[in-house]
Image (cartoon, rainbow, N blue to C red):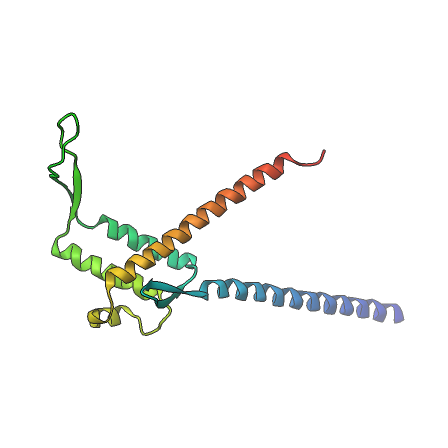
Length: 180
């Protein structure tokens, strides 16, 4: 009977050890998740001109990126592209073409709504909601704020692409330099 108790004790110790290691792993995994989440909450002060700064998210989470990209795509699709006469001619006598976007009232309203949505979800200030922007058009310059937000995230996107290309080229180079 003594050997059976010893076997049961060993099994109990192994289970306790496994549970302890599993709990340590779970703590580690949870800490990693929290660190990833913190990265999506980081913010920066965006200078929108004359030293006026507003806090925006430094990085957009994947959900916010999809929303941002969808809104920008929708914004670009508004209106009708029409040719405008410039009165400027090439050497061969053909007029240089210029294009403009003509917006109807519905497109203008949707464009304004998109602008409010973008400003509201990229800024940190909880007061800056779509409703606040709609109700307070005299308290901010939409073009100034929106243009700076677009510029910031476009630069972020270009950096991301550069980093992705660098990572790919680094991996390609390291694959060729394997020891034989």
